[in-house]
Image (cartoon, rainbow, N blue to C red; front, side, top):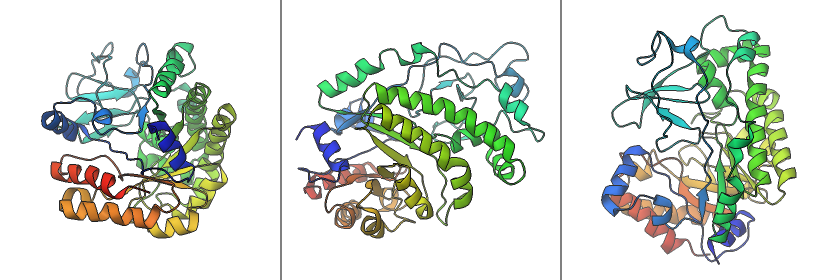
Length: 379
C-alpha cells in the first residue's frame, strides 16, 4: 500500500498493511528534533502518510489599532506595529511575530509569549464589557473570500497526490474557539447565558468565513478536513450539550454538508480535547467521520470503539499528560500496544499522541512511540 491508500483505507475502517501514524511537535520539541536528527521536516523524517496543505497568507493584517492601543506592549499610539508577515511554526491560523515576543493572526488573536514560544497569554480584541452585535458587525474579520487566498491550492494538493500522500487541511478552531479568542472565554461564556444575540452574530460571522474556506479546499480535492473546537474538560463539557446543539451543531452541520457536497470522498475530522461523549451521536448525525484526539486521561477508548466504531474512525489515543512526558519507553510501547488492542480491530485507527508533544517529553519516548507503532501497528 502507498501512503494515501493506507490512510484512506484505514479511515474507511478497512484492513491495511499497518496502522497510519501521526505526530506533531510543539516549538521547543521541534527545535530538539532538528538538533537530534539534523532534519527540518518531521513529516518526512517520521514518514507520515499525510501532509498538511498550506494556507495562503493575507497580503496585510486588518487594522486592529482601536482594539489594542494601550493594551499590548508593541502597539504604537499611531499607525500599526511592525509585524513581519513571515509566519512561525505551529499554527493553522496564520500568526506573525511582533517585536516584543508577541504574535497576532488575521482574526485578531493577540499573544504575548514567554521565551520558549510554547506558552503565552492572550489579549482579546472584543473583551470590553459593553459589547453589542453592532461591535461584532463592525469588527475587521479576515478576508477569506478573495480569490488570491486559494491560488495554488489545487496544484499543492495534486502534487501531494502524485507523491501518494493524503492532503489534510487543518482548521480545528472552527467556530467556538475562534469566537472566544476574539471575545474572551469568560465573556463568551457569559454571553451564552445573557446575550445570545451577540453569540449568534459572532458565530455566524466566523462560520460563514471558515465554511467558505473549507469548501474551497474541498473543491480543490483535499482528502481530510480537520474541524472542531475544544469544548471539553477532563470532567465533562465546557458548555452544556444543549448549548452546543443550539449554537454550534447547526453551523457545523452546514459546513460539513457543504464540504461533502463539494467533495463526497473527503473525510471530516472533528477535534476536541477533553470528555465530549454526550455529543458523539450528534457528531455522527452531522457527518463527522473521524474523532480526535481520544484523550485517554478522560475517555474510555475501548468503550468508544465498541459503541461508535461502526460509524467513526479514531485519530490519537496516546496520553500527552501522562504516558508521553512521564512514562518510561517501555510504558510508551505498552500504551501503543493497548491502543491497538482497544481500537485497532477492523481498521479505523490512526495512532498518534493526543496533542502536541511539548518540551517535557523525553526524546527517548518519542523514539519509543515511533518504534512501537512500527512493531505493534501491523493489522
